[in-house]
Length: 287
Figure 1 (tube, rainbow, N blue to C red):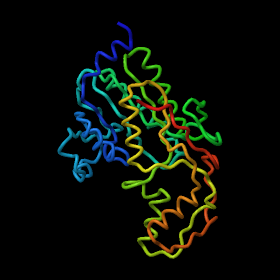
Figure 2: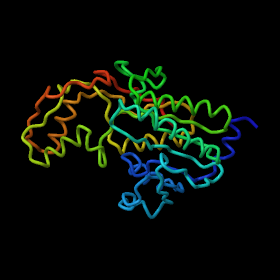
Figure 3: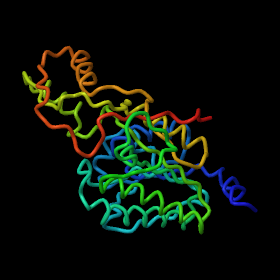
Figure 4: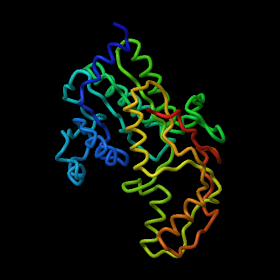
């Protein structure tokens, strides 16, 4: 039996493990998975936070910090994993990503693969493309330029080598930018919303001329589900395929909120860990 034949023989299993279940993407992805009748095993550190979501009673929840403890769970043969977990963000320059995140995440995924998981989808990052400019396809060569991006790209390569000795499908989904309910409070739109809520008259930001690729988190979750259901190996961009300036993004949010806050452009320098202009090219249509 070939590798693909062994994989396809396991596709009837509906058990789907989601790590980082209570994170920004996980909290939006799990309802979509339940609508598709997957048997979701949700893994996250904070069970109290998990209980705040409507889906909590519809999943098997495991409270775990795999940086501190080993997962005590036997997946069904042929189960799937969507791995969203990653600590230490948004400190992209921290060596923690290489020294702690990389080995811990690899060990966690390897344990599940060795225990019978047949399909693995891992979220990567657009930062893996480094300082490449303009529209970027998923086939572009990775050129990571900070510890976070290097750790993510290294994890992808580690898992590629693991495939040589274990039969599992690997899907690598590089995330571009996103916004929506549950976003990191340090993200620009979350900071803007907080400033508007506080009644601030001024919002300090960079010059705002950076071109980025943004999606609402609900669209990100749907793209991840589509990638997973495609059962295609490989690297994928999770993106809108369109560029928008940070200034325009902020101005549109202010208009949407009917706010009168003034933008103090150029207060902060442009980030030195990303190029001024880059956005994703959508993958071929996923069927």
